[in-house]
Image (cartoon, rainbow, N blue to C red; front, side, top):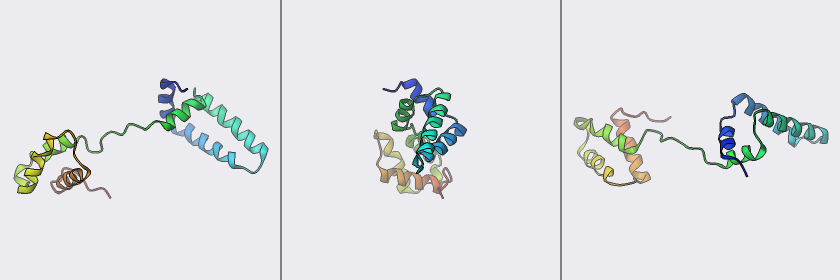
Length: 127
């Protein structure tokens, strides 16, 4: 079983080490037994050199990474939009006053909120 601290460390493995490990692991698909064995030994050396074990790495890969909200919270976006009251259309004003009463908003409501924020210049449209 993986140690939580080491799983967290695996998420923080530096890019150079991760690239090296990825290149070496690609060699495990070689048609040559010796090349595969050497690649496995080298991958193990890279991993242990970073202070990790295979269960740490696998455990970290299985954990869902914490993703911060893309645009802060939707409540914050509502407040920012409502602060631009003179630029709001009547429907938008009603829409923006309604969601804060709820614990969650739907995907469709998030889309509408984002479109309002883009129109007001609070958010930029993703390309």
